[in-house]
Length: 403
Image (tube, rainbow, N blue to C red; front, top):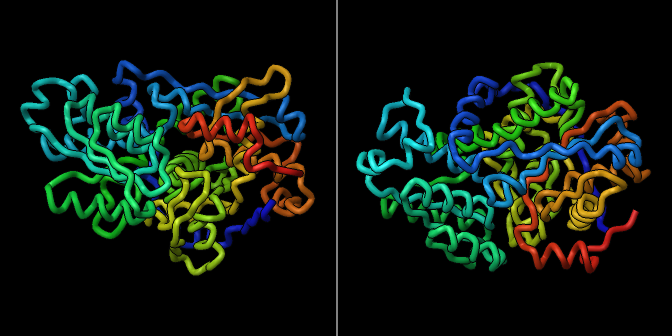
């Protein structure tokens, strides 16, 4: 197996990027919107007690986003909220906070007319945008990067969107979506940000914050004040920054220690921290990792600033790490809950197992302060979005891992 690389972040708090937009009060608005959908249920948080004992830590808690709105992934939280906020601002007035029923009503459609939302995606985000657009009576156009799963394409088409797999990488597909939006008057719904395109990514990040707020409610109900550590997977960094920003705002200097985890073929955030100059760095090329949802070479500039200023450590992992995580979650110890986690959902679990068992990573474990008292929060961001690939890995041992 290729080496797992890590770097301690030495830039924390040097610039102190504002995270107020991810405060509990702001996230409560996004959560209230999500709860207005008839399909809403709080996704489960599973305590893997036996795995925690095996790895000699105080607790491992995995939030299972495969059960989000029946879409097998968390992404719909961001896209749907951003679409609602766009309509609030442009058709209702900034102060009004819409519910699902209001947005999906004939009166709303009469006010907005049919809108076209466009996005680039490897699958989960595009499916979420397509699902939300269908619910709201609007149109979605989705561009997918080369190598995207045909099953993911089929799922997006089933939601009524126009979708196609391009011969572009992810970042190039994002630029294509932006070009089409400019040419046809469409609305880009993308969770990456660039100069001049920051408002919608901000709303998307707020939508993702629902996950953190739910997790905290669930931990508190179990008698846990807060996790000591949070491991977050990152593509462009929007999801990781949303969760990081929530904890940084809620707990300040007492926030949990955070590790950011990327595939080694698309580790733009890791490389940005290694450079240590405070500026984001890009990764180019095909980025042919099985962690398709994390195969992003250009950081979200808003997300990067939050992760740079508040996260503790960054990891760059080969595909074997997430394959091991998928097998660990799908084949639990004793009475631990079985969790079906996809390639982009399980990398943090795989990394945690290596971190606590591999001698070569003991320094990283020590630097993070993980010990027998640590209570660690992981988020499985997707289920088996490509069931055939899931079986290849979990049943047949594709990307075999060793200690």
